[in-house]
Image (cartoon, rainbow, N blue to C red):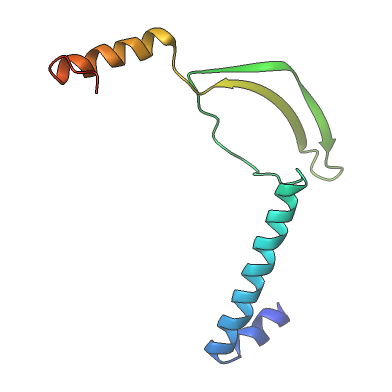
Length: 102
């Protein structure tokens, strides 16, 4: 809290330099974590034509104080479309373009 109060007391130009440096440092750490396969996107929406649970959820941590659990869940997603759906889209597009597939 004291650090932030002191930072806010600096001239705006100097604050901008500090925050720019901080943002660059964070971006570099994220790049490195992604490169080393250590980056966690946290909570994300899982979308796809078909989403399936792979195996049973596994509890990997329980907070001693709150008893909140962290659970690891593996899922399999199919983000594509079926062959039949692709053919139907092609047929519709062909009909809308006067029979031309291009």
